[in-house]
Length: 360
Image (cartoon, rainbow, N blue to C red; front, top):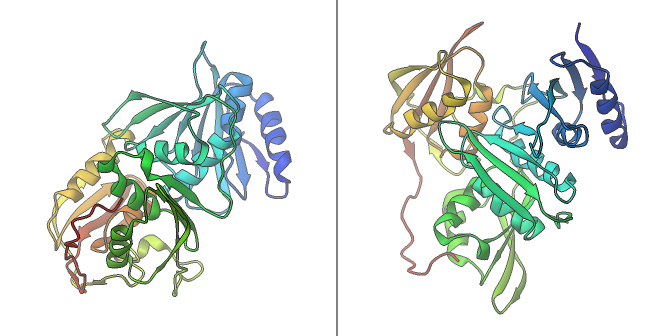
């Protein structure tokens, strides 16, 4: 019988005590179902650190409210071994939020092993920008849908994030990584959220780039400028037509582009079938994104999976362009079929700026 603890009526400071008590009374490999109205991952990381005990946990539905998380103890951690935090089942919009919270709660010398389905280097730049030079970051494995990074906070630090969702000091980011890092993270911040960029000067070419890609759906404000340092806050506009309450976002035929591009009514033609049911979970996303990258406009691939790939939809929605098309073809236990493709787009200005100056 699964022990269930409901934290929805608990105050924030009670979360840790109730989770600790429930897990302390549970044997190894016995599941505890935790129901909460906010993320509990940082509390589970804290338990691993304080008890030197490895945990395994899975979100029943990563997009559901309230959260329902199945947790089990896996035995003691070895000497100098860090607990693991696998974020691959979380939708991209929540990954950074949860990871920032988890790192913020770490004490000096504490850490965890992050498991992700792609290189989480943008998180490294984000943590350095928010906390300073207190991050020890070491790759344990790379690629094949499973990236493992040992992350340790080397000194006490609390994120300086008043009034902003995230911050990037691009002066600390290699030039070749700046654009990808900023657009990757901007796509994940919530509507109304603010990204702060610190650059050596006002990045006006970046502003034009944002205007071309996002239209008028953002606000750009220079809040501080001095020689060698310019602080810009970019706020994402609220959607004018939010998804109706109760609607399934993954039932849409394409990602909501917020009015930045006009998608064609033509449905991409499925040119191949990709059945990932026999692949290890760690390899599935890599295969799917590889297949998507090889598609031409107007083409699609029919994904066959053994469960609803809704977290994958959110990752595409955050990272793919307005041509992204998602359409369920079959939903049955053990067999979900989804057409994932690139629709023809119209009305999108893809002209590259002729400004010879780099954005930063």
